[in-house]
Length: 477
Image (cartoon, rainbow, N blue to C red; front, side, top):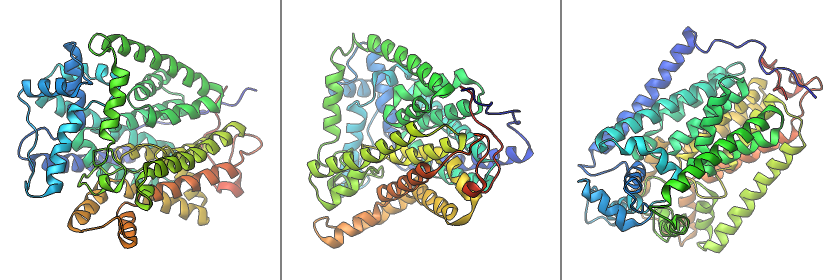
């Protein structure tokens, strides 16, 4: 069946009020960048942009046919370029010492895919001082563009709410810019690609950008790609085209990395095991939570491990609970007839649910930008569901934003909390509320999405469902 066109007439991307909003977004990201730069200066030398450092020096190794997944090899390359690690601020503080040691681990123990290293070659060809500035600038620019386009999808329904939520995300990107984590790029590419597909503009740009995000962080971009595949019609076509581009990139990276690291799959697995060990940078247990690291883990394992610090327990329950919710989302998507606003509700649900089963950090939670259109739909309808949508979305964004996390980090460092007592467990959960808030947000949007039924003519929302008249229709097949 042929469906009507998504957009009858393309609206201008820039007007006076839109330019003012864009200026606000730029101001917000600039504040984040300045705070990140201040944090970097306070480190008194040494490489603090550790996540980008891992990619940069790993790419340097691979370019010289040295194994980027062998920590001693990367360490030698790091030192050969005159780089240094930041020293503990207080050598007598075990948490400061542990954070300094974690810096060495993050940079030398490679956990990024070969495709990420391949794509980083243009940066690795530059001196570190220039490369890190360009990396942060690119990330900041893409985050602003993604926020603006996410707002644009919601602008016809609730521009004020969407604008404020996007501004909160941008003004709290300090850790993303401080560490240079690829999530800042991947999330932006996902949002931009979604806008291209829904608006049917610059489709090939959307395909390439989504493919890039897939080969850098498939656990972030994969579920957006899966939705497009399940939705059918032109979106399925775009998903298949994206997969083809991603496969070509993956094949090129595998061929490129083979001379330097013929056993990179096993080495990568070993490195992931190292960083997930007790007390290490990716440990979701209370040992990792109380290690002094500002980049807390936000998946369900982090909360469940507080209740019972047994990896078999918290990993299995996290997989079962998070996986069952995602499976429910898949089944709902398969049985539903496509509608644009139904799609936005679907993306609002999965943007929270994808963060729950396996390892994710607050950097990855910027994917909640995809929830702005879904929140706008419910807010425009008013009523209790609108208020609940705003409250849960705002709470999840705040709990995964960098400024609140920095504040909670400073509070937790001053407290002596024992995870072995009931009071200590409750305090740890209160100081790390992100997993439970993401769970609540994901379940809410999944419930709304499952109950949503597109109107019979497939063009307009039912007034009883949303109370507004949409400005757009549906995607063609």
